[in-house]
Image (cartoon, rainbow, N blue to C red; front, side):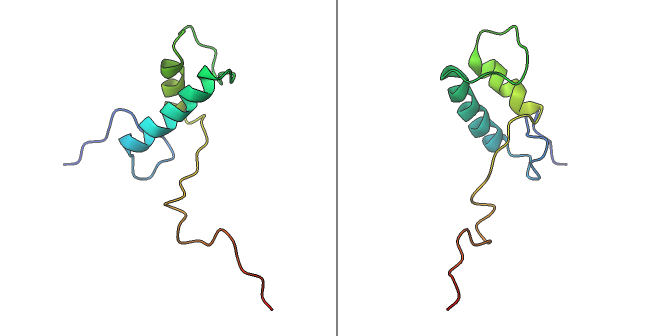
Length: 78
């Protein structure tokens, strides 16, 4: 029986814990740099706020590896 991780991004079909950590870490960097939080929080730590925002699905992300089969740039037809 497969166990689901405690922390997972809601719209992540793989329920990847690693993706959750990467997205939350990048969001924490944004919060440290002065970005406004999506949630009113009592926590002073940006990592806690970033993890909560990511868990609730408020942080949008794009996975270039998952999109690798679709071309990003198409050559013009001559």
